[in-house]
Image (cartoon, rainbow, N blue to C red):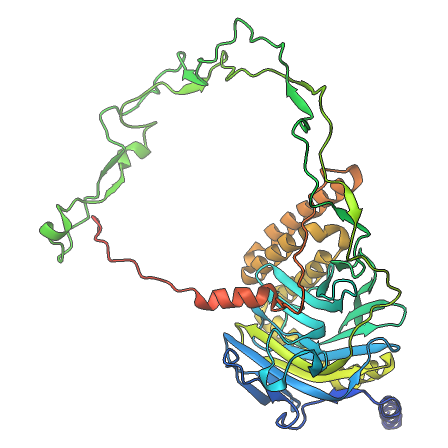
Length: 531
């Protein structure tokens, strides 16, 4: 037995050594483990808006250090300049980092920005949300927003504008407080893969209009902005029949309901008893001032005599539906003989159209973290840029996985203790499955609705069964629409940025700011006429 354990230990040591040797042979272009203080390597922005304090801190339950977001409801900005710019057009590029949301994440970002060279117009000490980047990657969560961002900023060679291109249907952010590792792999054949904890969650093509919004390659034609709809263009598919005549027996004035003449007052009805009486146990408060508060009146309660009787007070015949009711008459609809269909402007050549074999990204010259968050306790660690997938894999195996396994076992034990014979642990598994369901492409239109339901169930576990039923209904609705067709939803065009104008804080940054600025105003005291 002892020899077997020794052999296993030697085998594991040899495997780890192989991984480390591999990483050494193919060194990472950039790597920061934060084993040492970040001072001197990372530069904190001096901009007035960014008051959040960064700390070099241990990950909870580990001896491993990371870069910590230490205060709630603050903006944070910090940047690290690379020794040499990293080309995004030369072979494979792998971007990887860890985050741990130690206090959860209700509203905030935990993403990285991979910045262009300073010649693009930024300085480390002035790093902010306007600083030009090539890629933005990582978790973002606030309200209905729950996604692992992957955003490209690409220059249109015709217009000269830099445009943000968002990955469609990105994966969701894990809902626990464990350490997770996020990986983006950019391949020379324009493929991009997004991994969470080493598991592929999304594969896309950089040049596909199906994968990015807006697409990197603009449409060849666009609607003519100067084209106007002719005045005589009729878009009405149906029109009222001009030859239809209201029937002579159609009474528009007949009421919807009439008294039920056949109704009989129930036996035992108490005509002389009111439905409510003064509460006999109520007394006027000692501090009641008749001049200030008015004459005191005892609050009303249900008359107990009415509980044993069919009813109290004046009996009236109930109403019933009027069989003669037909409502307002309107002529039936017929096909419009002048119908020309839905008008749309003619298409013209797009002056900003260009063809592209590969994206022409500018190199990465620095890594920045620029976020607004309502939660503290966000820990960044093991930030890596590599030119080989195996290097990133080796760091996941040696730096991330041991921590994650320890945290997962600890979480499992806590769930078993707190979870009513394992109920909490079961619910967590259910939620994890539901988050994966929300990422299914054919449910994309319902993703925000599903995520909102999941978050409600997480906050109120007693709603889990109801939430499951609601999500099943949504899935069936989407399925039947997919199979049998349905009304096509109008496409909502997303607003894109131009000429370095950035809104990459995303919805989480804006919502976090609104959340902090919300104030509750106390209502003036109102005196009540009860006890």
